[in-house]
Image 1: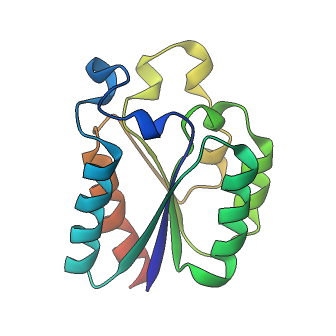
Image 2 (image 1 turned 90 degrees about the vertical axis):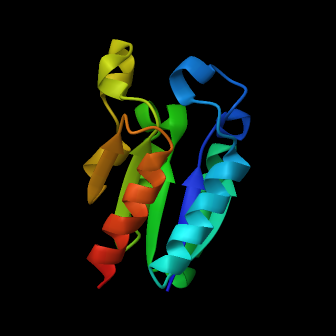
Image 3 (image 1 turned 90 degrees about the horizontal axis):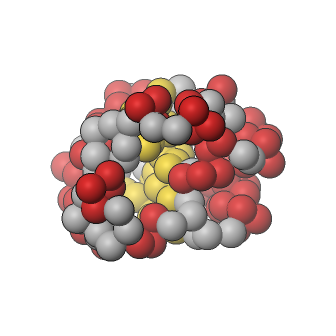
Length: 143
């Protein structure tokens, strides 16, 4: 079973951008850890990152046919994109939202996520370990 891991804007800068908030691991480090954990769980993952909203929507649409589940860190699009929410609402399998930081301890505008209204689970504030927790939960949801 394949799970899409979709990362939104600025996550390509992990390890370089605000390491005091997001840590020092790079996106490549996170993807490698996710591949390893998915293998342990009997799953495969396809990792994607885009700074463009329309590309994230296209990946979600592709997932309708190719993914058993989606793990998404929509970054700032969490707080602004009804279009990503609408795309996720067309996806009939589990969706897990991940945030590296605890969005509820940050600026007030980050406290609301459109994606959360569709997500089957939300993991926030666990650092990049949140992706591994999401994979574990996804395995449970898909069992």
